[in-house]
Image 1 (tube, rainbow, N blue to C red):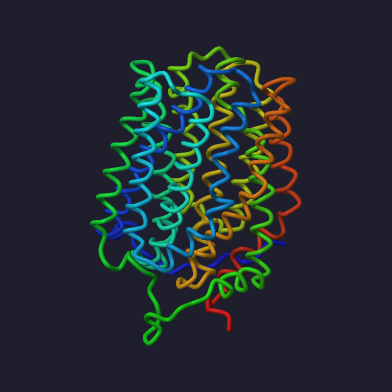
Image 2 (image 1 turned 180 degrees about the vertical axis):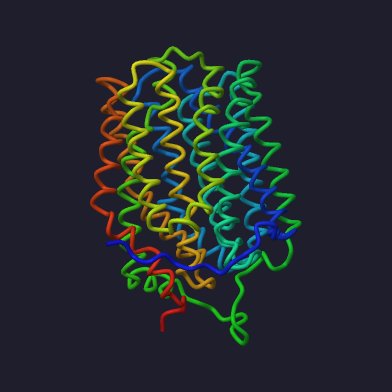
Length: 420
């Protein structure tokens, strides 16, 4: 039997999210444009160097490593210093890295090792930037509007990444191999300037009167997460689902290029088609939550994500694989939006950055291993990881159904306070 749905505070559909959020949204768009261009350019460059699935899988696995080694430190930075400055510095470092990769490509010095180092640096910057973005949202919008705001941020990530960045990256790559990195560097600069223009309210967490300047140790955040039984259980479920998704997606670019015969310059157009699902899921997730609740939205999103991956693995041609991947993207976005809101509603804002960092570290901990496992499975057939990953996601979701459907009751009874 499912838990009762929360009766949220009514808000007008016409109510705006504010100028501060608008600036943050613009920064997210620019940063994700840069991320998306670089994210596709690196595997495209790698495929030109080698078609070994393990080498390609290694680069994919490295995208998860920064959250494992830098997730918690990034959360500490976000909670303790001006978030705007932290985000600007992170993007400055990524800009320099993109420029270095562009020079290496242009001079003929590019190799898998250079791409691997760049992947790590890009990931560390993304870890800090995304953590700060999540922590900023409650400081800029009212609690009843969190779902809508998170949906917009997710839509920016998916829409810009897949509809704009990846097609543009493919076209730029066709013009000149180094060009995607040059454009990516420009996007990081613009995003850095935008976050520096954010209002003071975005700089630090809102705290109760008299709590200003009070130091909250890291152990407080850890104890909060460790003793919050529901949040801890959902984190474990998310880690399992994420591992199977990572396993499935280990050699995505290679699958489309080698199995379905897509030209490297056309991969971006294919991912744009896939992005239809992810963008749609991001835009409708908050409306679905308001109608059926957090629990059913999380359950349905995860199921669709798994079913879509399974169909990709079974697809005989591109015309079925792309719509199926779009369904998976829709489901994953339908999960990501309420999951972000759930974390924000259950966690005290003073420790939100560190808790998000810990959660991301824990949920991403299995992904590098899962990705390499997927790359190993792909040595037999490139579609096998999608079949295994899809079945895994569906299985975990069914086992965790009762847990997920309790989400609304947990939110309705929550009153986030710092543990003693």
